[in-house]
Amino acid sequence: MNNPIKFAGSRSTNQLEMRTVITNQKTVMNRSLSAGSRLNPSMQFLQDARRELHKQIPFIATPGMKSKSSNVVRNFSLSNLAALNQYAAGQDTSGAGERDGLSKQDLYELDKEVMDSEVVTAPLLLAVLVAVIAQFLNGYNTGVMNAPEAVVFPGHTVMQWSFAVSAFAIGGPLGAAAGGYFANRNGRRGALLMCTWVFFFGGIIMALAPNIWVLVLARFVVGFASGFSSVLVPIYLGELAPPILRGTFGTCTQFSMVIGILMSDVFAFPLANKHGWRFLFAITGFLAFIQLMLSPYLLESPRWLLSRDPDSAEAAINIKKLNGLRDEAEIRAEIQNVLDAHNLTNDSLSTNNVAALATVLDDGDEGGMGNGYKKGGYDRVGDDDMAFGRKQRSKTTTAELSAELFTDKKHSLLLLCCLVMHVSQQLCGINAVFYYSNLFFDGIIDNPLVGTTIVAFVNVLATWVAQILMDSCFRRTLLLWSTGGMVVCIGFITLALMGLVPKIVSLFAVMGFVSFFEVRGQGMQGM
Image 1 (cartoon, one colour):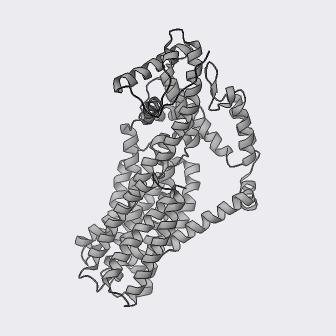
Image 2 (image 1 turned 135 degrees about the vertical axis):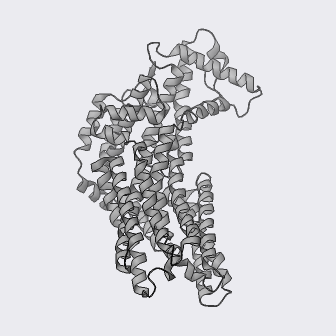
Image 3 (image 1 turned 90 degrees about the horizontal axis):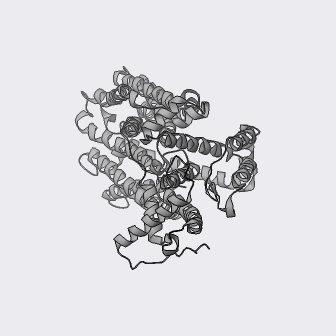
């Protein structure tokens, strides 16, 4: 008779006894599962936990995924380990199953084993470091025009300089639209190389521009590349990284951008003069050239390769390199995880398709446990199930999906909220800070560039704080408090510009505004 599992709130045993309990539990699992499996039972559990993470963590590197990954692992453990423990107790003949149940501490240890099972391999780290150069250049070119305004083509009009600054923002949306298209057509790696070439030529044109109008064109080209990278890099890193690491790499992309803004101000100290401003602009071309030289370390996305050919040998090789896998069974399991997650992600675009596929996935599960658990061992989605999912998905066109988003009441309200938040994020005035903050601080401090650099440094610190808050606060709470803080700071900036409060207040108000903006932006990304 199966013994119920007791989750005690605390344990009186010491650390050694607790580890002994876990060892006994794993021994029971070893005896109870199929002896014919090529993966040992504890490894089988890790593989199924990875599969669940692949299903529930999106293929994009964005901040805020750490807590979600922890919740997914915990829920998976609660459901599947409970079933395994009960089944193991029924099969065990040594009595270990009767003596030892899983406590909360045991569950924590096993969850930690899953979370710590991922390693950052050298190929993965190199690919990440090379890819985030594009996001660094995005941030760098956001702030690079702030300091040298007085020395670049002296005599230009305010309108001409406004064109040169704003051309970056005009090229950005076009690049973002093109990024998704070329990522799907040419592959993530191919699209990233295209983006790097655009950065390279844009940076060279900026450095060699003979007049202000050529500079306007170059800024448009660099803006196009920046928008391109903003869409592409998070997707590329999210498809390279294991699910548990996607939040970490999402943090890397954000930090790369804000550090790029900071470095544009730092480099301006020695270069924002009549002899050095071309070198300041040439840094874009130089870093793009470095990225091209390091491009052999950019591996193609396994997900993209498998979406084109489920039997892709290159995808298997890349998965082996990126995840540090050695066993052939582990590689096959990881390939299946990516394929299953890819098909489920595409099916989720249609509510009807999700329901249809969920019926297939739930069919045959013991006790409604889900997650592919069947009595006597684990199972996975079969080829017939995935073929059914692909068949269902093909019945829905892009036009039908778009119409469903706008016509369905539940979806249309969410879509409207999403659009309003993102539009307000762009129209809140943050670009004016990074483009023209030197003008804000003119007359407040002796060197306005010092104030601009301080604000950029605060921006980096605020990004770090926002990453911490994302894993401990509700997203709605972050959005409301940060939006309120931005409104207050804008009020003080306005009062300072009108001369109603001391001008030094504007420096602290701008720093506060940037800090709240970063918190708001991270809260939106995590939703």
